[in-house]
Length: 400
Image (cartoon, rainbow, N blue to C red; front, side, top):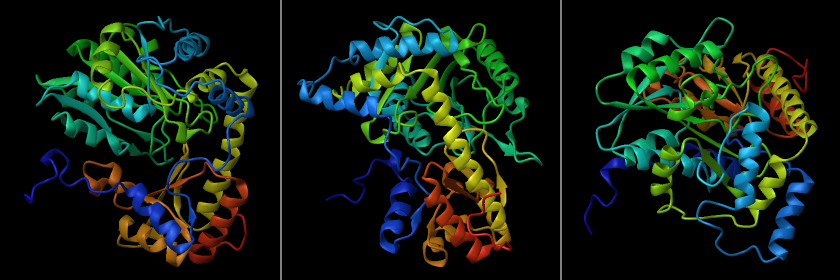
């Protein structure tokens, strides 16, 4: 057998950090605040709809574009929340989670050597998808200010454009920083996209998990941007059904068609009984979405207060499932990878080193990400362990 079985496109990627850290949690019995999945079930109406669909025989291949009612519900959702008008027959495609939609977009739109502007840190599948497409990522750095709010220099976006740039890959609300891109920041990105005739692919899976006074503004709502924006989202985070892997991509017919051409050769279709159930979720009343974010904000505050009580400089997220800390108070050399690999033993808690989300790991070497999408007693137990191991406080829960 040849030595170079693995394609060179994926050389250096290895096993995802989530698999490594979750295995450590199982091995040590540590509390897993690493991977971003909820530990509670979603709304009963959504779960019951999936069971009803299974019992009704919705167990074979769904249509290639996705269940017609789900596509209609997605279009209704975009109109209801953002005033975006979509034709569910031609401008919406259901995918195996947002990850497959991203892969379809990159593989369907990019040729070898095309350049893509990305914001780092970034979710780890972005770099892998770009590698498989033989495209070249060009990073723009997100950095926290004195208040811990991440931002970027608009000049860096303009400077990143070359004659090979085809696409901007945007994630807002952002993983792993929890940043919500402001309207002014989106305007700056849009101006570059319009000036240079670029496509924008935007990952908005945390769209309903926005805290405090932050506001999620879809790129497709900006003047002149609908026709050049492919929007991606999913039901996993919003309905606590991450294992169902029901996502979607939507936008102008030309962009959706290009991404669908690649998507059809990935899973083709998936999750037949979960698709009508997700449609039920998208039609839930505003009260569900309001309570969802209110509950998560309590968990966010509990975790952030606890991390600060443990002595860490902590960047409180504006959205999403994650809070980021600077570990140098506990690990002066700033080696986040070593910190996370030892944390299950030293404190009985699992986190994820943020450096894996950077193209230039040195920018995030001293940062570590914790997930707050857990029950409060789980967060309290993890905080108690962290405070006992690192903190200057004596409180048990770390709650303020």
